[in-house]
Length: 173
Image: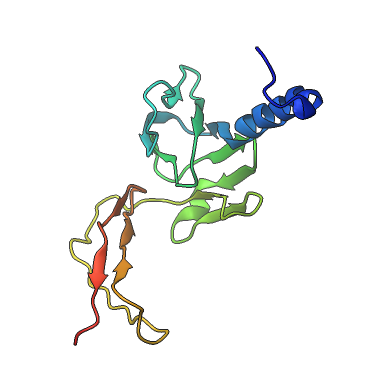
């Protein structure tokens, strides 16, 4: 290998180390375990890399290693006894520990270092009753200079997300 700009020759190795550290910092590694209950199934949500699947080991530990570009990833656990036990999640950026019986109508939320990163634990309903949704949104800020692309993003109760193609708001003549 040859250094193209000799002035930067002494910086090549330190910069490489910083880039490698940066790549490892973006990875999300973690484990989850439920004490006082048995995990029957663990389903990945938004784990898009087939080479890094969510794993459920025989001892009941869920483990993962993923790289995210700022979106959400998670998993849906099916437990032997609903809302029983204690959930412990350990990641390289944050930890969460909660009593599952406390998740009836609320979520547990742990901030994980800014940029909107956080760990959330919440209980899904046994039966989904929602089938439709209506949303109204007023665009403020005066007249746009040209067409205004608007996107809709929906997060379903199971954690999966969907985005629309751009919907262009056009100023009427």
